[in-house]
Length: 244
Ligand SMILES: N[C@@H](CCC(=O)N[C@@H](CS)C(=O)NCC(=O)O)C(=O)O
Image 1 (cartoon, rainbow, N blue to C red):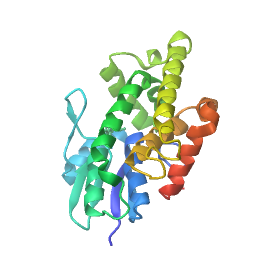
Image 2 (cartoon, rainbow, N blue to C red; image 1 turned 180 degrees about the horizontal axis):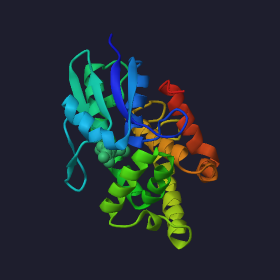
Image 3 (cartoon, protein in one colour; image 1 turned 180 degrees about the vertical axis):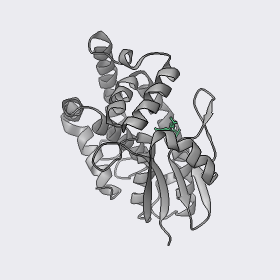
Image 4 (spheres, rainbow, N blue to C red; image 1 turned 60 degrees about the vertical axis):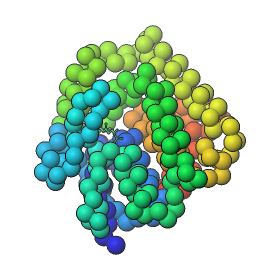
């Protein structure tokens, strides 16, 4: 089998990876035991490169069309897929062994994905601020300019220390309290009890983002909530998906 190619976004961190969207297909590829290699990209190079290889643009929540990563190139079938959800669907359909949507859970997991995004929306400016600190100079310049334009706010106003940051921490904690309630329904390792699924990939990708972009003490704070449950869930998912 020819290794698949995953286009991911580079950073200054050891090991590079940090983006939650691209972490999802990385987890799925690892879980299914598929051979793959990563093509690391800087932000300003994404659009020209994706256009050149014939990837399709993605539709953002606000309706705008743009080139985004992840993109997956499968030389075994000729498929070139944009968007983490569509990549998950493609991998499940093409390589059905070790299902990530067990027991016909795809619809429910899609709803879980949307629910988690809704929970995270109000708090995302804090990790976005931190992400701008771990990118290369070229990527950071692009990232800050596009995020400032998107939010119509200067980066320095995203999550300044003080009442605004405190509010972000409060929302973050509420988000994890809600996630805990969801995970407690089965009271086991995964959202679906003993069965690993793409829902856990979504949660783990969010955790990876926080662990990689936040400062050490900030991640430690989250890792300490609910008796270390979130650090444990991330470590378990990384093990399950052979990403460590
Ligand atoms: N819904 C998309 C979101 C992907 C996305 O927003 N990717 C961002 C990086 S996290 C991106 O590539 N942005 C390109 C840009 O800002 O130019 C997915 O899940 O694949």
